[in-house]
View 1 (cartoon, one colour):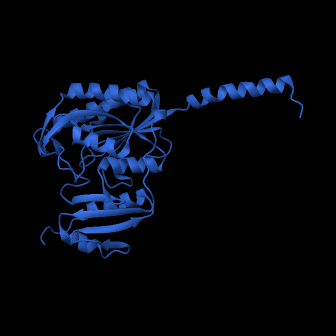
View 2 (cartoon, rainbow, N blue to C red; view 1 turned 90 degrees about the horizontal axis):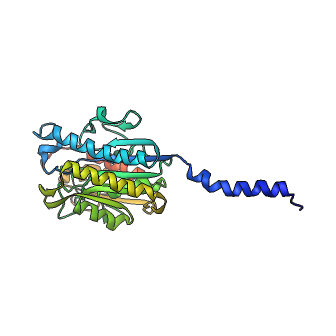
Length: 300
């Protein structure tokens, strides 16, 4: 086939402009925020409406999210979705957030702490996360509910809320690029999901004690960390778990395990543990949400 000089010139222009066009793809950032990993947060006094420092902790939490939002915007983000994922899902002071972000609040919701995430996002960020229920250390270490579960496992190994969320994001092709929380939580997630930028907001001394950064210093480090992560977002890979997904949930109260074992597909594999094989991580998370929401009498 004869190629004219005009055709060759057009082809060269197309090849040369493709990378530039790809680089101009809008940056969409998803932010999931919990409270236990926020700087200054150590006990129930900060974690719920009855606590004397809860209102102050809401400001700490909101300011750490604002730091992540500033960094995302500096990186060129045109879409930012924030999931309020602590307690009643209404802890963020949303009137202090920029007008052009969107916020997911309250429960129940499909996707749990990662509700609203889809494949249109380039990166996921986790603010204020904590260690798993299986961790012997970590401030307020638990998985989903400290009052309900002693352990949650995916495909045979115990998981934290961060790892569950990373697996949900990974199933959609979205990498987790940044995590903040105490030293135990951040180390746990680096060990499980690999390449991720982390900021240590405090060093755990016990379940209810920590050596913490000040809120201002924590926010500054988060802003810097998120900027660093988003500047090289292409280097991060989605975290994927194999399917089908084998889910195990161990309860504090054996009655819940007995009741759930009556459901089709649910197997009781211990006095307080049930197992379910889910088609996807999303289905597994929905099962966890149902199990956490079910509250039987605590008596044996």
